[in-house]
Image (cartoon, rainbow, N blue to C red):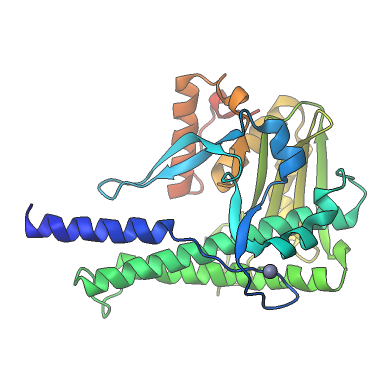
Length: 322
Ligand SMILES: [Zn+2]
């Protein structure tokens, strides 16, 4: 093996080891908790995942890392206790925070429940962004040590690592607002658009996204997010769009197209929104197995193209997830 290839392989191993390391930190809002974290479910386990899983597995979009090419995306069966879980809460605080939505049935008129569903998405997203920031920083430092990057030059790896910290910080500030609402029980500070579609739901989503085109924003204003949860309930599809009350007016403009649509077209728009903005979603394996290979290819292409360029579009009935 040439020396160059050996160094490259060592480096690959370092990156893969780093990516498999867990970021283990309880993000409980009332105290600085140092207890070990569990694999906390970001999508409710006993009521929602239970309905979707087959043999304790669910289908997820999983990035396939290949250091020689661009990363690819695959739809893969993932074990229920791995799918959509994150190591961002200890056992005690996970059950304390989310007991009201874990033991009770979903009630659309209950403001605490709707807040907690959105809060769980926010906590998971912060955990994910911190992990990405740590991974990119660590990788960047290894590149500098190996002489592949010059820290005096603003190259791509340096900017990517820096932007990951900025993205994590945005979410950190945003989660603080949710923490304050939780700590003061002022749940109505988060507003929701609730849609109940009379059709069985083959998937679940717990995610958030900022739909505002970054070129419309100047001076990095506080980011505004739509928190999106989709899940089955009583043989219906529930869509919950959540916003901080002072963001609702601006974000509503982006959600209105989905809110005002109906029937299959509403589900089609929702499917494209999920594929464009979300990575934390699961599909029932039974439903996924009904997809043709052409449909799966079209889904992967749209998911991947929108990851590279958020305004990429394709009008294709194969993008229907429901
Ligand atoms: Zn804790």
